Length: 377
Ligand code: ACO
Image (tube, protein in one colour):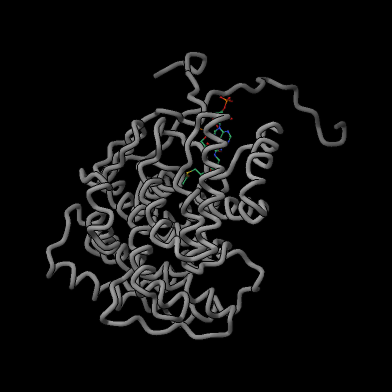
């Protein structure tokens, strides 16, 4: 047992390995692997459903397995009626992440396999969550427009159905390609803060809904998934490409952080950035997207020039979401609708590991303070 005075605090748990994982590897040199596959070999060649299958089953599906998985997901997209009612009653000003956090927790009350925590029940629960998180978001958005969520279509793949149900119109081919790539790129990322939060909760043998609720609350913060919404606010604030340098230099002179830049692990380019940039180039025939993209490139040059730091996944993702017609208050929740596959895969892996995640702290407070009765304080 280490003596309290000998404990070394690793601030922010930087570089501390809290457990082993086979799910994803974040390489500081700018590479990302899912179950051993370099994401550069997956993106544009697989659909998001294949990535989700890979994460929870630890292998890529064959065609028959993929067809079955898509059918399973499509049926699981239906929400219990009380969840739909609850969403439609939430105040319209509520942030979608607040509604998502509440309704994922609420889903536990309608779990058809209540109190069955076997491996097979947890796998079915994981699949339901991968399917239901997107439907919650579609229901939040469409109910605020006083419109119904359309039924998912049999001939659509999962990510395409999500976008269709969210927007209420059939996505075109370019939009479908973007949503697959976006969701695949956001599916997992080592022991990021929200995944770690999910694993801590799961490590107490708590249920999957509790673990995912912890993760959603953690993703919401602007230092994590909430950054893309802030990126869009910044892009809206900068009227013209010519104003970028002055705006960014002003923020840096005031010691402010530029949202969508920097990363705890990567010391090279975030490997997801080039794919996101590529997605935007595919959509550059749209005037608004091209204008935002040009501002982004200028911001990237200016920030790199001053701080030698690169954009992270949230930076170009903001413009990709905008190009898909997703309102900015939903950006973080689209991230959640993709990361859910990583979260549930990590929760299952944590159950398999079976160890309680409980670090020590280094006490720096006082001892033996004289107690003073309340009437004398
Ligand atoms: N803008 C300006 N400077 C930055 C930024 C930034 N976005 N990010 C890091 N730096 C600078 C810091 O000021 C610091 O400089 P210094 O050494 O001169 O003091 C140095 O880079 C190291 O930064 P830290 O904050 O110590 O890095 P840390 O690993 O703790 O933080 C984080 C990583 C939280 C992502 C940080 O870069 C940040 O706040 N970025 C902005 C928010 C953001 O985009 N979050 C999304 C991250 S990706 C994701 O979670 C999906």
